[in-house]
Length: 190
Length: 190
Image (cartoon, rainbow over all chains, first blue to last red; front, side):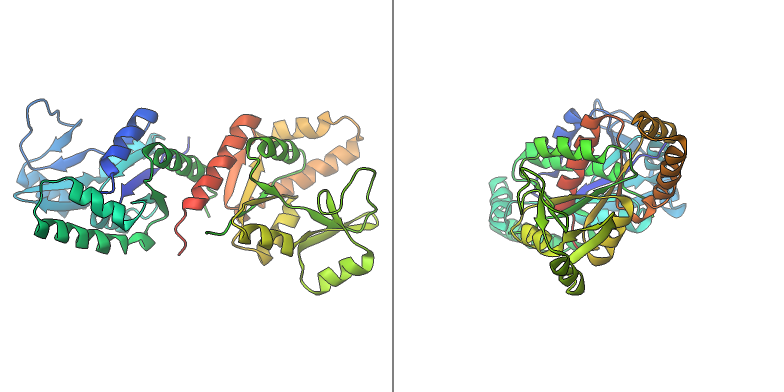
């Protein structure tokens, strides 16, 4: 049996990673989704091993120390990370796994897991990305400006990825990602 | 406008390159097929520039001398080759072009055109390939043995290709090749 693939789906904030991932999940039920580890408390209805692997701060720190995370980051007072074991067990069983993650996190994963397939989701244009960031409507001008500036920087990291997929229409973007997965399974490994 | 791709479809004799190419032609009418140059006489109904570019021996030799062929070979008393111009004009106009060719010829193309996408069509198994070679039914045992031995050698050249596509079912093989073409258009060029 051949190993599965780790597909890393990334792209600037506002490009629609979450929506594309949700649609892919419907179209490719055989695709496994990477479950993050976190130190935050479970919310009502959240299950360990399904929504997150819930960890104490000590457990999380031990995962970092033992190189058991492909990447990790801190948001507010909590840590989030991608457990290496879950990824390796999934691909070891011949299944593909997808990880949806922001641009900097994806590059950290690439350092530890260069054999992953790194897909960068592109906005149809920078104007369109700006509209999507502004369109969320909840932020003030300074926040919007900052998020746009970050998105521009993130676009500059495209060159570190294997594939660029334009998210012009969700259906087309999903078809391109499905094609990339099929093609990668046909790749001759040198 | 971005450039088209040169897709080189190859594989051992008997694997079904011609059948897969014919089916792809129906499924992807936008895909251009590489037209060979030849010194042989046109047969009834054959058109210059459609079936072949018909050349005199002198013209063909000049194409070789001026590096205007991506590969060429001699069969019996005639020469056949792949004109570089036709490939470059097609991809320059943004269209993809496919070249169906035996394994040695494909590797010569790779030397002159490494940016091509090299796809190796695989039999489901060596037994199946043997059955297909024997199944043609017109050759004697020595010829069959020789063709099988050549096919085994050709299989060893898989490592020089980018993709391996199993021709288990024509429909599946075509879908895989279509996916490879879509994926290659999404590739980030380093």
